[in-house]
Image 1 (spheres, rainbow, N blue to C red):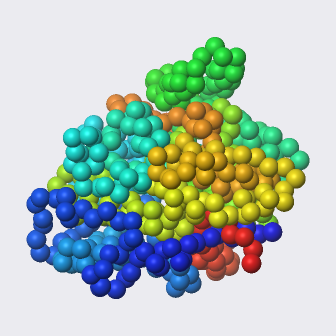
Image 2 (cartoon, rainbow, N blue to C red; image 1 turned 180 degrees about the vertical axis):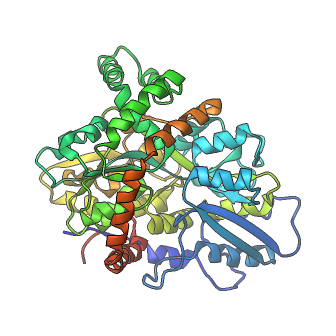
Length: 501
């Protein structure tokens, strides 16, 4: 049975109005106007820089999609009596964003980069701080205080120390997306990152064209024995979960120059085994069967799993560990802070979190009863009633203190759905213990950049081959474009599963 996405149109349509009516737009929205002492006057401009396809937009093929930017403009006019113009631009990688802002001097009010890049921008004095109250909560983002997962807030606050600079937007893990039908051993093989070097999957693997994730993959191979020994010590009770994660973090954030030199040898060996590098194309290539394995961010894995016509794609966090990450809303120096914080408050309510999760497939920082209801409305839960084997997933870590009954966050699912969209979106606490937060590499960043450039270097003969292939394939490009367009249109239906009608 092909699983589809579910939306909560009744919930959303009852809570959001795109008219200019002065009535409240969002049922559970906590307005900021009564809290702020200094109101900006006159028409406002909000300049946002975000990842590509990383916020809900209007979609003519899907009436349930909400244009979040337009909804904010409607809300702002009704709540504050002023118009706000939104200038919205997108980027493909953290490094591209950084270069545009730092080197080209581009001016934005809000940007949504990843944790390690936020650390770097804080270190370089590029960011404004959010206003905090006496208890350390966001003074003008009350929806975030009320609905953001306390577990995630504490986890990233402790690891990164950038709380006052960046409320969380989306979060997830980094793992392997694989075709479960490619051979009889693939599910077992994917339990280790080292399988990427195995000749069994020669030219069937693509990896992220991302310096940080690429280097991380190399570290998994380089520290293979140390990682296994560390896991064995934890299993034997010789170290605590906290000690295990601390030591894991040290290994997987290692930027000693000698380590970097050794990792490049592992990466060059990997280069001979992979199909290629990609940023966004991998999820399409997995759906079409062009490749069998892809290093994937969890949200992209959700997209591929849900749009897979053959129901053969699964996502796993290998035994050596993973990266747990978040993208947060930062305000560069000189930002329009008041309007920027109002926007973050607007998108930090459950209804807008659901709209964004529905559209982009990634997991929001926002919890609450409405989000839990959205999570529960999927085939993995429905089919558990008649399944021969079931498994309990305990999501209380994420939803606790934001829902009326914490027991509701212990979910029984059909065991066959493990590796599907639901478990990709919400990892278990065990998987989180095995996941590290990426740190800012500081002065060693250039060494890793050089390592990645070395890895990507290709001689002229290979470039000539690639160029020739491009010319040949150009004849059939229309077919490829049509296929990509098909999946791009379908991507707007991403979320969890929907029970077949």
